[in-house]
Image (cartoon, rainbow, N blue to C red; front, side):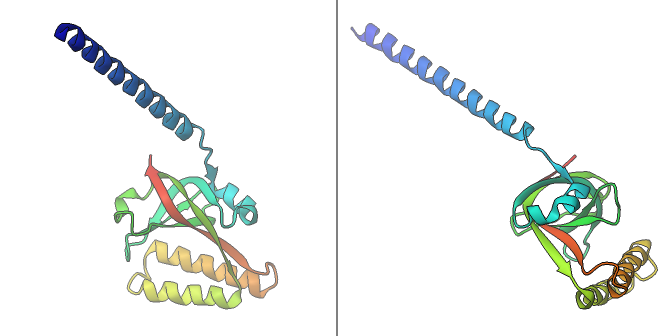
Length: 177
């Protein structure tokens, strides 16, 4: 009787382990399928669809063009048009990053926040840029940023555009390729 009971217990344990493995495999396959079905927008597509995506969770891919060395918690991604960038804000749940990620491809998921700037806000952006980058005035990055900001300001003051919209993503997750 003890042998029969032992055989039944061993068989039950083996069946239970096999069932758990099959469940785990199904869950892993479902997770892999979900990851494969995510459709990432380009930076350029976000700018084209911006208003319709405002406040929503988006999946965006781009090339890391700049890493903020003041916080190591922000970076910018660009697409085909280098003047269109999305600022990625890494929250407290993420470790800091460093400049070594510049030039890498990034896939980011998070909430898209539009920043609409009028003439006054663009001037404040320029002042903040100058303040945050004191001592870097001779760098290519600084010169390009200031020229870009000044061009936007000129377009607004001349009436060519009513405002400038840029985008930030509050990252929920990101990966580098």
